[in-house]
Length: 106
Image (cartoon, rainbow, N blue to C red):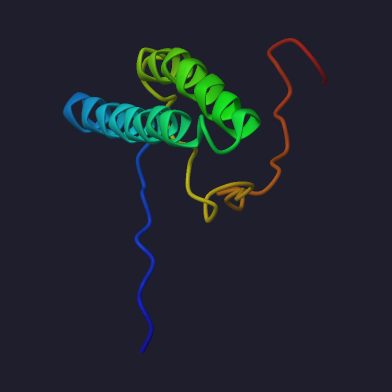
């Protein structure tokens, strides 16, 4: 048997702690990439100035986007599971006949 897919049946957001941890993780990864870019700029300066300048530009631009994404705020509430989208339950009662109101009809 294969893995069963977990279905989320609520529209609730993830907890604030999970959200903060996720944003911190993304920020740390982007700062690690920035550090690699700066080190590459120093190492490549004597070999290829063009590659070094590209790495240096990457090292200066990445922090802006890292802070922007880290402070973007919480994610929106998740959408409902696909199994419920478009499902219309059958009507409980059939169409009825309307009774005449008082004073109408003979």
